[in-house]
Image 1: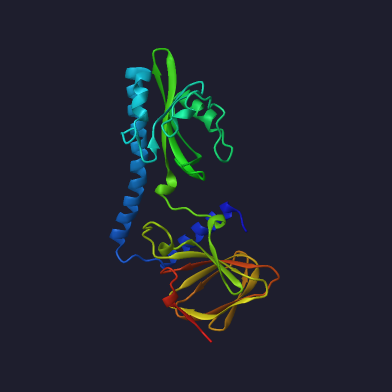
Image 2 (image 1 turned 90 degrees about the vertical axis):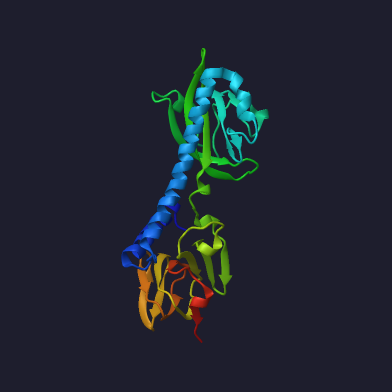
Length: 298
């Protein structure tokens, strides 16, 4: 299995290949571009909303001091609803307001770390004490009532009342707005001597991605092969590991790490793993892979 950074680079290269080659072509360019803008605006709107709420909370604290704190704990209010909430610390790291679990208020959180060991507590304090007095930070933190961490993006801003200084913050979970995946999280299906897992397939995610292609990780066992078949749509193979031979209309194309091959639509194809280790391939289908587009040959 290759490193995540390498996977991301390969993903970008292959998607760019499709765009340049014209394999991914929207029916209406104007509508597609508008869809992209709307998706970007949804993320941007949440970022602006979060910063605006923190700014408003800071203004309230600087007017009322700790008398404002009960408002932040009130459920289904502008300050605390769904998985959104405002939290407040003193600048020494003592947690003053934590709506998801008020029993944790009063704790020293200056040494708080995220799931990956990032010193978020000290970083929060550093942001509030910086010259700007505000800033964004990303880290991994569970959503309310969940145990598995998610990528969170949080805005921190300093506040003061009388002689007491605070840091005020709120964040959102970026995966609610942007789809991400890793090979470690892919579910694989076994077909004979081959394992198939979708990094992205519009029919296999719980949101509308506004895409019509699939990106698949295919693993062929050492010394084995994929049976001859025809795809009605074009495909692109990119070899991650191993070696083998891809036959297109019975013409052999050697496969080795880093090799990219475009397979025209309606071409007879089959692949052999000629090595003694797994042959790992990224496969892009446009439109997204569908059983009705595949014909198995005898």
